[in-house]
Image 1 (tube, helix red, strand yellow):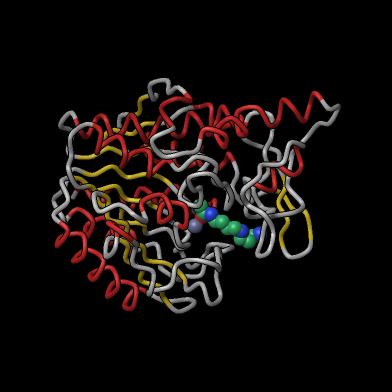
Image 2: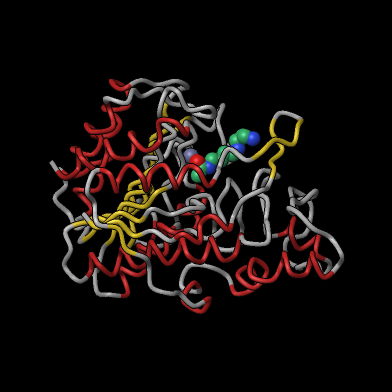
Length: 341
Ligand code: Q9C
Ligand code: ZN
């Protein structure tokens, strides 16, 4: 399996997130991608860089004003004499208008964001665009006939919606991969999201579409991030009704419960008749993860990989979360090896 990765990921670093009342260094760090890269290289996977992506190519998934904001926000911040990371302080929640984009930078930042845990730094745009490029390049490899490809994306993407960022995500890498597969002629594409958190962004992007199935396994929103989406009764709307499937799990679920839900998810993907599969792969389902709602052991990741491979679909695996940094390389490699075996 080819690995697509860009060193530009490292441009996104140095930010802090609001965590339990304190500003702390982000859990989502450059070391994550470096350690995954080291593990896949050592295991003999061929690694290549993505092709360059233009901002224009994001518009099948993202809003033009949103993309413009992400591209220019930090330059505007610096032009105002500020430095360091940017985080918003107010959001358009219930009762507040969402039909007007504020002109000022702080208002616009809150408008396009949903949490204070996703700082923008000087290099965020370059890193996010390169990560999107990894996912799109991996999709193109698979559309050209590769049985599978792994996009080692950083920052991650599944929390980013059509016009909103958050959850360490700016551009939705997996959605861009699925959209690219559609453009390249695959009539039906399934996205299976096995990150520990619900992929609210991916769900929102494909909510009214019947050509892209979204299935997610995640810690229940009753207790876990992103809190406000990911219940089992969310099933899509309009033409997309029945093409979203959520399988929330109780907190600290272990392999037996997880594996049972995974079988349901695989069955849903099988029934859909997808021509290709995009996997949103978070290894934050690991018991040792500092922000994980699910408690899998390292030995379960190869089993997960093998079950994903059992669908026998052309597959793009897109890296999402995973914050147990010391174990992240081994856990991702476990999935990839299990997939190829
Ligand atoms: N302050 C992904 O796994 N914050 N995103 C949790 C820590 C958000 C996770 C609380 C977690 C987002 C891609
Ligand atoms: Zn996650």
